[in-house]
Length: 165
Image (cartoon, rainbow, N blue to C red; front, top):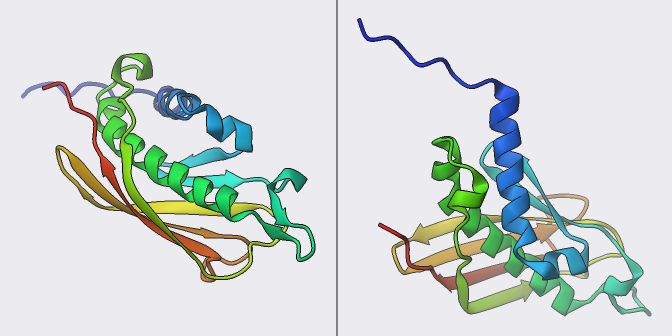
């Protein structure tokens, strides 16, 4: 009977995943500029855009700036695509520094503003509808207090970087 390999301790796996996510997010300086961050639960990512006065576009309402909202959704889509490419390597035990993919390039990105983004924290998740060798399609939505009531949603197409075979 062949012997099974001993699974890695859970803390080692979590640390490898967290380091990979930090490296992936660290490759996009605009994420830090906006103050956004990503939280990981298994292979699922949730983006968080903490409220800040600099994010207000219309101080009379006040409402989140549409450009900040669109950028938040686009970075959520791009990081989610990068994470989907990186995930199999992480699970094989490859260090993030050795497996970090180039990020996809935006072909087009359409944002639907459904309601006013209020002056509070915002969250976003992306769902990948198609990933091929050259092209990917992603949908993303942003919400604040209630996930069932998004304030913006987006659809984008991305040029995927060449993969080393």
